[in-house]
Image 1 (cartoon, rainbow, N blue to C red):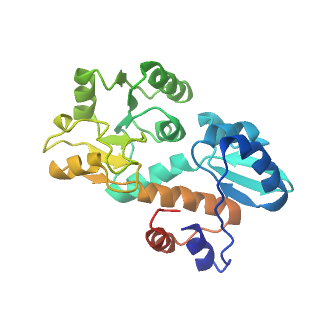
Image 2 (cartoon, rainbow, N blue to C red; image 1 turned 90 degrees about the horizontal axis):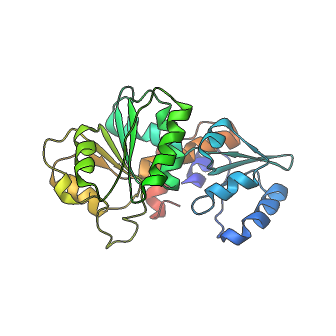
Length: 263
């Protein structure tokens, strides 16, 4: 995906992939400092990367998460493009604005943390959370409200079915931000009984292959897309940070599809 963007811009194929275990991340940062101009990184490194960076951009500092490194003169700046990736994907996929909308996140872990704070700053009415651990949802909700006091929100657990039903019935967007669905046989994080034809909610599943939730949405005629466009958009934002050039999104989509796994 990224090399497709580099090639389209006449910059060759400089993007590579390297497996780095959590205990190796600090050592990798020193390697990157000396040898690389930029890095994308993903789970489980995003929080530790924020601690290891020499400097954080305001949006990375706000969410405490880093997925992009910009390296110049041996100095590493940590940034987070996940939020802008989700924002742009929602607008593109659903041809809609976020202003005044009610957003519900399924999950309150790393993926939600990197994106919920950003969406809270996009003029939405409220950002709510359904999560297994209530305290974790409340912590993230409090962070959103601290940064954006005009944004309201509700926190509940998967076990509180009345609250779950209430949130889904009133939501404009459901963002599925858990890891449930990464395995082919994973169930939906939210049971099919919560969904029915005629619901106004639109579903964005951050996982970019077919999942049980996506199948439930299709069976009920609910607008739903997978995470492909978010992955492309966050990658495009990283590309522009590194190069100062807006990438060819069509080329990135072709690269994604050719790669098969989105890498």
